Image (cartoon, rainbow, N blue to C red):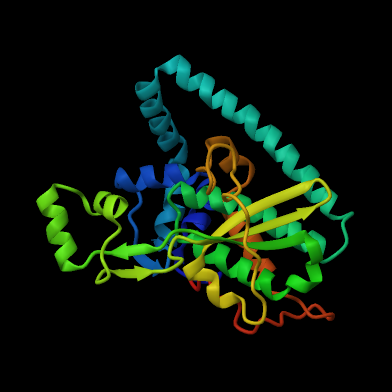
Length: 300
């Protein structure tokens, strides 16, 4: 977003008020800060807020934080909520230290691999913010990964892309829908049991994925993009098929929501700005050669 703009993104509001996305949503629900505009992206909606209203809240933030904490105390119990806040603070300090060590390590890693690892680090945290409800950030994730595909040959084995086959999507014809109703079956249940007939439409590879693996020395990041989204990124090259299921992060295939300590250690504004910077390559003289800048998001 332009510096002279009167509208701010959630990431910019978080930076000014020193709050996480959940706290911004709380301010919105309580009527302290209403969205002035909603921008729609392919993967979700992003609210924009008037700069003057955001700035007017800064003097009130100590009282608003106390109100937020009072609600937490009521929800979890005072002592439990206090212990959780202290644990979040200690965990955030540890995560900040780990981030600083990672960024320091990047200075010892040659290009373009440091560029690739930096993208992986911030995409990792973008995924977590998106899982927490900021789904419009997936547009930025897809742009970054698309650009990495274009630079794939320079990364060698440090960037792997695999095709993960998935099942097709079946759209029941009117006759099968009527039969499902007669049998008392839901649409998904009917498809699972009977598979539909020859008149039902089928979208092959609808649930297939591309798996992106970024690795260098001891660092490794893994991301997934739907086949229907990324299939046009590969023109003269076909990613090989992956044997087995998609790689998991903990107990989740597609990543977890961000937690409170993580929002303190790696703020959303840092994630957005760093990834946007990575989408604007520089020529040898240091000039931005990306023209009008990244496609995502024009409002950020």
